[in-house]
Length: 232
Image (cartoon, rainbow, N blue to C red; front, top):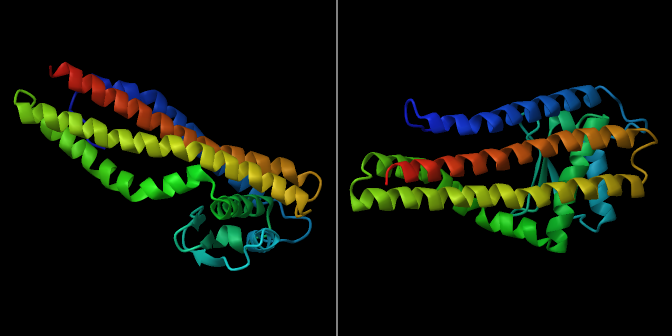
């Protein structure tokens, strides 16, 4: 992230950075703990995902392997679910919970859940905007005495606002997917008594990372606004 040297507004980001570190620690701890807890029925993440997809009439959605750790995701554009080996091929409470969460996204897509559709629509826009926001703002910041410098700062703030919008709209998408995941696992008898607690802990920890991202985006936008005001 770009920032002005010796810029005191950087302190605004410290609460967000601390919370982000806490969220990442919670995810790592919960995943590590419940990856060691085998499912009583021997079901892997891929097995659970396939069962849940079929139960919701989504038999045409393929499940593919993806490299990395916790890189699992549902791709609404290509209608495919991608699971890492630690989730798709492992018979653990953590794996089943994460796979069910991604299935929740597939169900959202099939039902036309509008927050997911809106997020999918703005993904390319926000990606482009967030990459340009800081360079444009910094350029305007150093040439703030000119009219175009002020215009560039304002443009940078507008572009970064789109990144905040993406983070905010992601929250209901992820929370809803986790809610669907837990309900689907219980309704289809894919987890045994006691395993629901582990699934909830893993998904709750994962949700914290999205809250942290939204908080960081909000604090960064506030920082930009303050920097903009300091150049008036």
